[in-house]
Image 1 (spheres, helix red, strand yellow):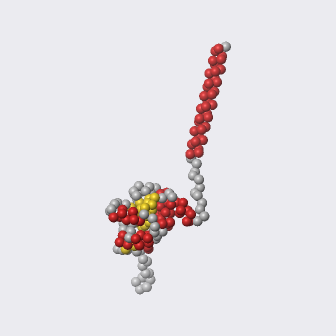
Image 2: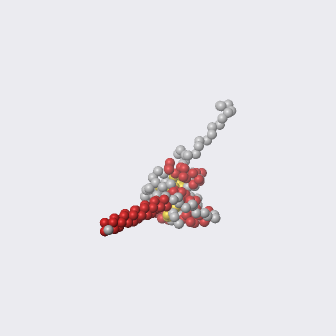
Image 3: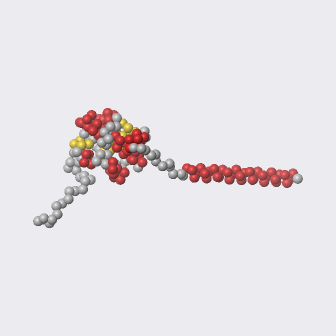
Length: 186
């Protein structure tokens, strides 16, 4: 009888081990499935101001006075102007690269390839700059810093740190003017 008892106890232990193994496999499987879930849908806002206020919490900012110190130090940096090109073409912060906010996600990679280098961003409004910075972070620019305030604030505070007509005499992204067709020359 003791041989039969040993056999029954051994079978019970094997059965218990199998149940525990199945339970652990189930837990691992559930964990894997849950970690592959898609993120919750983006938050909904009643207006743009509310959205920008919320997004501002997740972007790095620098005051205009502190950014001027960076300009004074002659440090190397990337600087992005997100205003429309006609505004950039009249005046900008020296060294800035222009990609308008409306085409930012499509064109910035062509003009600023260094995605791990600090990138300072400004525009004609801080709100637009915050939206641009959020988009840049989503397309893998790792160190994006919003220059607080608007470009007009910058011009008022530091007019000596502006460059007039930065594209004068340079090739621009603007299409060439249309040639006149017809007439005597054809």
